Image 1 (cartoon, rainbow, N blue to C red):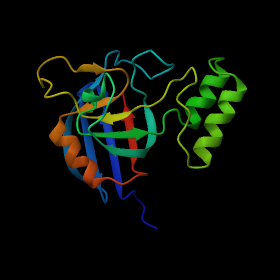
Image 2: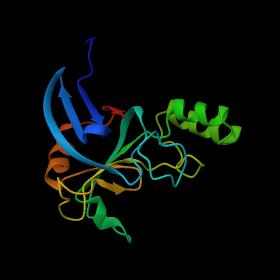
Image 3: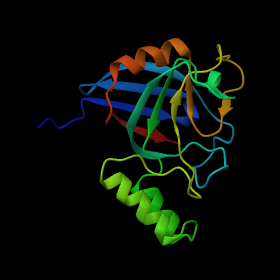
Image 4: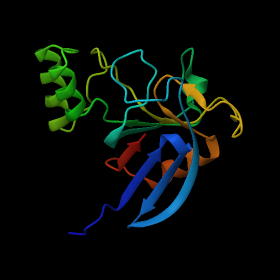
Length: 171
């Protein structure tokens, strides 16, 4: 068993960068945009924050996407397993979710299913493109809790990372 993960993404919020490591070596550095309220860890639905911590890629989908905001996903959607077990435990201890929601999150995560996104913690967090280009020198607080990448970058990344890839999101 190798001492490292085959694929790892490390997003550093304060630098607006994400690093893709393949077989222990940095492969690519990406410019990223963040959530509208980028400081601090996501605590609950509607706080417009991007979670911080260690997560896994649990879903990948190619567009086009429908709905009112579908164009803002760009060409692809890559979902992470937020809320993870740590998020659920912290929320339960802080009285943000009832025990039944904690149990649903833990059960889903431990059985390899998608965690529910209809608790007070929210969900449906991931990486996606954008409706056109965003300005690398302009506002980078665009999403409701996700990482946005330039469409060409996320399209390339999508083809390289499998389900199960670890993503670490740092302040």
